Image 1: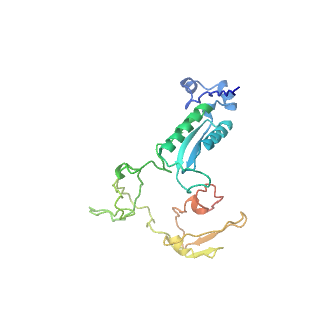
Image 2 (image 1 turned 135 degrees about the horizontal axis):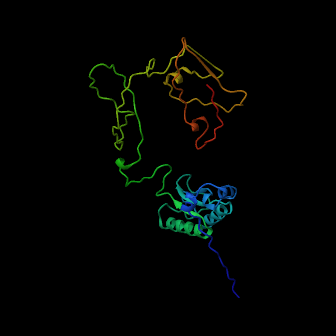
Image 3 (image 1 turned 90 degrees about the vertical axis):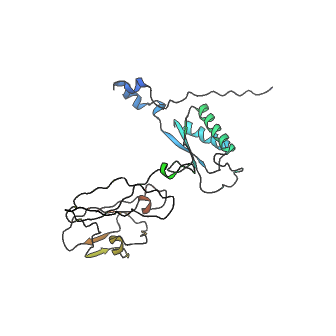
Length: 264
């Protein structure tokens, strides 16, 4: 006798609600569906191939757990970092035949489990690109600078390039020039305090003047013992902006809940 195994393909989750559901007037149905929403409203999740550390067995187990958790689908994402993992052999190179086979296996398993399946259009963390993308077609970074001039007369002046760089692939293109009267008291330069007090040992002057070269590292502290800096000016001033580093600068890389609060 031979065992017979039967597998059932679950119903595919649609990517968007039906037009009738979208256009229907709000009513009792929506109250009920809010308590027990259709799977079309369930969240999706990123599904990572971490470099070449991929196996079909691992893909299947992950997708089965994702489906069991009630998640509606995955977005396949390839991230290359960390190097080979122990016990993973052979490594699957992105866009190789083995990689294509793993992607096909992922798609078929999603079909079997009733999960939506989508994927990045090419490997990359925050951008899509590759050697076939020329700088003129690449994603752009908007940069700017400020030039103060005396008005009331014809101005013929070459404006400097913001953040100049000697790398050949840099592709600068002018977008626009904005000219407006300078707000009263706005010199474009950092305010110079008369006195600085703090419960830290750092010399704050270069940081407040924008001349600091190294970051300040503050160790974790309790909410009732915050770090503080008191800045005193000789006269009343208009404080137009206070600039801090990024969120990750307060803690460590790839951390989006640093537990940092700031009061001014």
